[in-house]
Length: 174
Image (cartoon, rainbow, N blue to C red; front, side, top):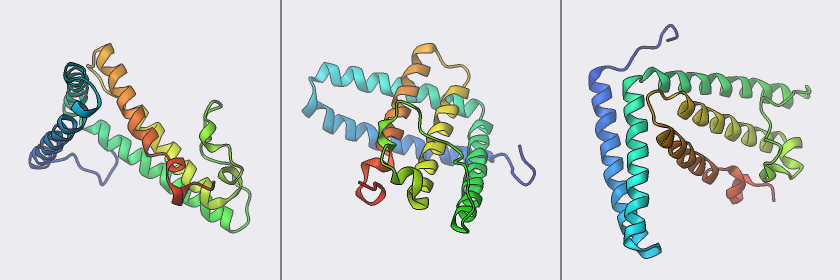
């Protein structure tokens, strides 16, 4: 842990646990409301049970080692600081290499503006840095079965992909 940071207190951990429980209840109610309209009941129950088990296993892994979340947040803040510094350099006319670039198969960021316009470059890099930190957090969770790890990685990837700036009018140059 870095100097100046402190581990969460038992009260904070319990408050986070309660918030996670409430979110879980709301999410379950949403799933129970939406899924029956989309798929047969048995399939909905199977998907929900799989998601629930995977998220529960991930939450338990984080509870066993909450420092993983703190470390991930600290790394994300470091990434954002470096991105901010690069943005200031770019605005002053200095040529700056990107901190992160999309993978070769990622077609979402093909428009030239993602690579030439400082605004869109920054948005793309913020998103990619966040996506990689989420992926890294899931990978670093210990004590997960192979199925839970694979499922949790899949669900996290779907959530992060849904948040892509290419999916929103205000953050997509096209």
